[in-house]
Image 1 (cartoon, rainbow, N blue to C red):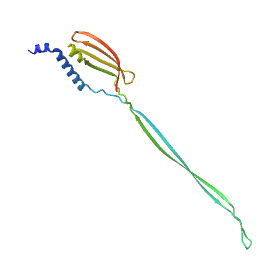
Image 2 (tube, rainbow, N blue to C red):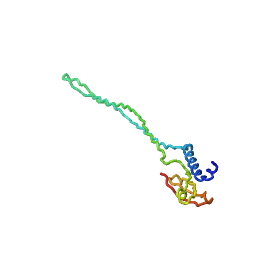
Image 3 (cartoon, rainbow, N blue to C red):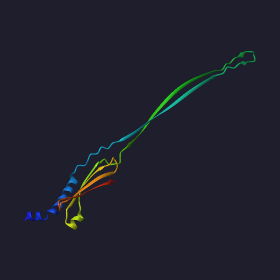
Image 4 (cartoon, rainbow, N blue to C red):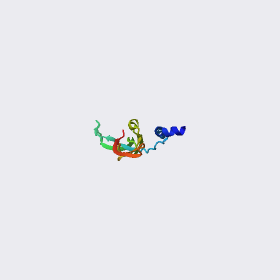
Length: 164
């Protein structure tokens, strides 16, 4: 009884098995580990302040004559003392840049043509494979298709797809 049902509805069971395999593969497939490069831009700024202190001492000599005839002489002398101080401050800023484009390189998928199943009762499956073009969001894709009802190769299509 079960063998007769399997032989009679093998095409429908094949579609159900394909859906279950795709769903289980999607849930159980390990997540790819991505290497996220970082670009660090470090700017180091050094501030130097130079302070010069100058002390100037002026001494004046004068000649003062008193009423009794004595003279007092005064002279002017200038003395300078310099003192220098340096102060340093350091400051830095850091900028981290991360890439925004995902690092996946390949694309793989399986599909079927439901209109061929409903219209002509044919089971046509296609494989979808693609590769990223030089770090851009564009993929070069190849899609071969196979007809399980007539047991023949249907065709192949080549195209470009955009990932966003």
